[in-house]
Amino acid sequence: MEYKTNITFRKEVLTKLLNEVILNESEIIDALYFDFKKPAFEAVITETSYVISELKATIKNLKSWSKPKRVFPSLLNFPSTDYIYKEPYGKVLIISPWNYPFQLALCPLISAFAAGNQVVLKPSELTPKTSEVIAKIIAKVFHKTEVSVIEGGVEVSQKLLSERWDYIFFTGSVAVGKIVAKAAAINLTPTTLELGGKSPCIIDETANLKLAAKRIVWGKFINAGQTCIAPDYILIQKNMKSHFVDYLKEEITKAYGENPADSPDFARIVNSKNCERLISLIDPKKVIFGGQTDLENCYIAPTLIEETSLETELMKDEIFGPILPVLTYEKETDIEAVISRYEKPLAFYIFTENKVFSKNMIQKYSFGGGCVNDTIIHILNNRLPFGGVGHSGIGAYHGILSFDTFSHKKSIVKKSNLLDLPIRYAPYKNKLATIKKLLNWL
Ligand code: NAD
Image (cartoon, rainbow, N blue to C red):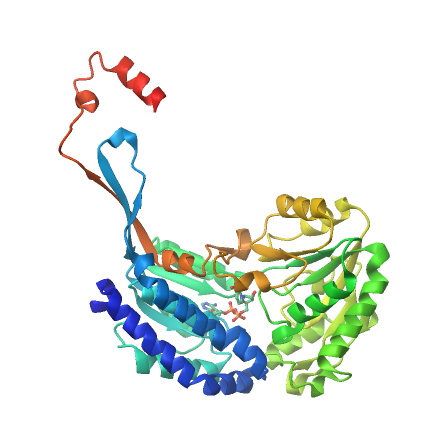
């Protein structure tokens, strides 16, 4: 199969895909609006332009990424030249979620194909219009033996998982991640699991509160809070809370107006089932801002909750919606008590001017990735690996790491025949002292 070995061919097909995405950009934006009223601005910055820049970077770097990489040889093998060859795994299954349905389906697909694999993509059934556009674009660009899209829901996904694959790349919830891992284990199939978690946002007394509020409101309410790396909850120094909540209210109103339901810049919840789940998490007695809901139209206003307990449903699992609990701490041990209650999160945000504080937080807690004094933006640098740890995921991707994710690294030592030191060969008599000295020296 040509795509397996021919880099020029892969680049040509990816260029065709790039042109097709550009050509169909408005259809993609419309589909995203149809599926959950994603604002066009957000559709461009988080979906289409994201995929376009991923495609451009892949096309530009494909040749160098795929070249065998020469590494420094071991003196034990002297004389030799040593290489890492990257080879495609073979048949790759990609299962993607609905919250960034275009980007999270296309980005792994681009890298898997770029690395020479045969790809089957199962996009989310919860954003059917976007999945339909994806299927149409892919069918136009690729031969179905190279890349194909299989639309459908849980049963289709389960059927695909029951087959044998050489690599599975899954993005979605922790619960389904475990199902994928189980299915993969049967054939010892390697996996990347891009999952979620309860990502904290910690604010100390030195933080620039106004700017923090602005950046948190942006990162939390973009995509109506349905972002895997959205701040899940705020943990703020007790004395700063009331001041900070005022800033949060101000920034929400600035961004979405007095009635966010009328704002063209605020998305809807993906379906009524998820909307119902989110509504049930709101305790009206604890609402300090927002709280308006409209199940029929899958609307939940940006909502702030004053939270004092970790026992509530709201503080049990990842919220994944426009509800932001605000909790407080007094001492660093209070922070530890909260963070340690949860599995390792996908993201972690620290707002502070105190370098020692941020350094301590980064070193003390384990999490996928994060920011100091901002939210979400670590995803934008494709030189930074993106992925979770523990229950928030296995593996990471973006940039060259995506290409590497879908490539098996084959180690090759090319040994010279010019010299053949006899010391390693039996009989070993009288050789032990010399080899020990040599190993010590090396
Ligand atoms: P989901 O796990 O419900 O679904 C993801 C995919 O799995 C879909 O294609 C779906 O059809 C399939 N699926 C669902 N149930 C299945 C089952 N029982 N067996 C086999 N396949 C099944 O996730 P979602 O609701 O689409 O997305 C939300 C979750 O994804 C959140 O937890 C979020 O944090 C996470 N997420 C993570 C990232 C990341 O990059 N780490 C990105 C986006 C979303």
